[in-house]
Image (tube, rainbow, N blue to C red):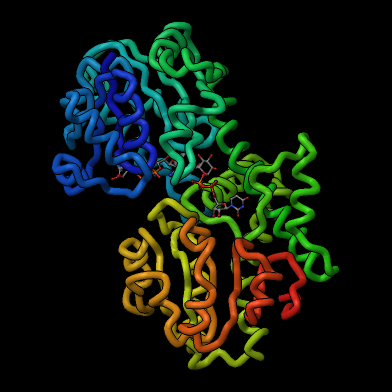
Length: 445
Ligand SMILES: NC(=O)c1ccc[n+]([C@@H]2O[C@H](COP(=O)([O-])OP(=O)(O)OC[C@H]3O[C@@H](n4cnc5c(N)ncnc54)[C@H](O)[C@@H]3O)[C@@H](O)[C@H]2O)c1
Ligand SMILES: O=c1ccn([C@@H]2O[C@H](COP(=O)(O)OP(=O)(O)O[C@H]3O[C@H](CO)[C@@H](O)[C@H](O)[C@H]3O)[C@@H](O)[C@H]2O)c(=O)[nH]1
């Protein structure tokens, strides 16, 4: 089989590489010449654990190619995936200009029957628009090449993308013809052999499934953040409550960790887009509106705790920040809560010294030289009045608190991810604040 993946970002590069890994001939296409030039040199545009080795292996095997030339790469493909960005427009709705632009280009250049698949997250009705763009382009060429469209939303998580792709909980495919179903079954056969279920459905349901999944996960997080905030006020420990409810299989243990609000390129954008879709169709997503507003407030919770601890006087304080990316094991800074927290600290006259194992280069695009970037996690602590844990990278989990106490000016930790043991830190003389737990030094933020 021969396939093209258009858009070589977090989703496109992982998708293309994983299909190459199971023996399919893949060309990954991007309009960004620099990205493609770098990929030809073996330099990846993103940090994703395990991806570099897999790319190298499949390029060497001659199964994985990179190009900026869609017109050439699309020729003779059985399947073309559209995996370009769908960023939020001014009003929160998904901006489809990249997706539809690619559809048009495919129509202008395809030479034989193929299935054109939207892998980007797109609102219900987008596949129909993709179909029209392709049909119109073919009509302009006076061509009558047959084609199908399909919707195959992607559920991978950054930082765990390869495993999520190769061992998915499920593969969702929306189709409207038996021929497209047959092609997509053949494409995903290697995954099905490993027992992962493929769920075929109509196209609008597949498109909606993606938004429903992300919105449900975001709802779990905002719900737990709300519970965490109430736990603090009432003197309960959200860590215990989380274990208590998570052991009910109907609730489950995943995605109920409170923190500093969800970030990333998906949850914030997709929750907004679903609210907007509903609005445009005369319906109000009341639960999701609350999910969003809880999330906005939660991004400020850690900052509020800092402010309260220092009696509202933050000017001149040096704050160390561990973790900048929106979650561990990625360099992605899109909608990272760190940006909100740091902006507020800087506005109060603090200086910030940050360390992140992989996201500092990416962070410089938004934070520039407004903060200092430490060469390691310990350097960030020197003379700091407090340490903020913003991203729960594994290397932050068991630090040497003894050494840290010699570097910090004040032994104060604000833990936005609840990774430390409050009793242990308090015994070591630290003032320790976390989320949803009434600690000795605590006052609800
Ligand atoms: N990032 C994730 O974890 C994730 C997971 C599931 C779904 N999604 C969805 O997948 C889509 C892509 O997300 P992403 O994070 O990979 O985005 P991204 O920004 O990392 O990558 C998009 C790529 O598309 C390229 N591009 C734009 N226009 C193009 C064109 N006309 N031709 C060729 N290439 C073009 C860009 O240069 C960029 O490299 C979005 O709809 C997103 O919601 C993302
Ligand atoms: O219990 C939890 C779990 C996550 N988060 C936060 O939620 C955000 C998103 O995390 P995660 O879902 O792990 O990362 P993403 O890579 O954004 O993946 C989500 O978004 C992708 C893009 O649509 C989907 O494909 C994935 O299934 C979906 O999990 C991050 O800020 C996390 O810190 C919490 O606060 N508490």
